Amino acid sequence: MAILSGPELDALVERLKVWYAKKRLELIELLSTPYPYGSVRLTPDEQVERFRTMTEDDWAAMRAGMANKYRGLPDQEQRVQQDMQNYRNYIARLAERRIPNVATYT
Image (cartoon, rainbow, N blue to C red):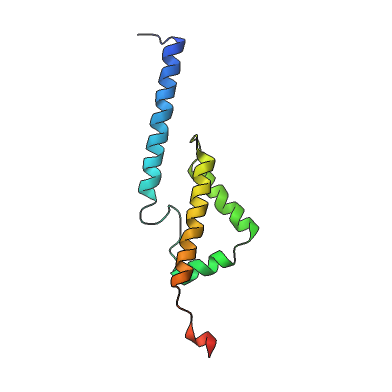
């Protein structure tokens, strides 16, 4: 049985880190199709309303969930920031397309 030396072991660790990050991102992508893993399906109106009524604690919980999703990746913070921005953009597009409830204006 061959024994790995320090440099060989260090190289193996680096290769495994790259492999782990790649596989983790692949799994995140697969689990998030068509909806983010663990999400609850809501109508567009319900999504916009939930967004409008979010508290600071709700935002912190969402951010923590996103941070957990990218746990162990070297660019975790950038990915969380991008997901938060993507979410805001998505809700803004939903709100633009939203048809007002006519009953509320009569």
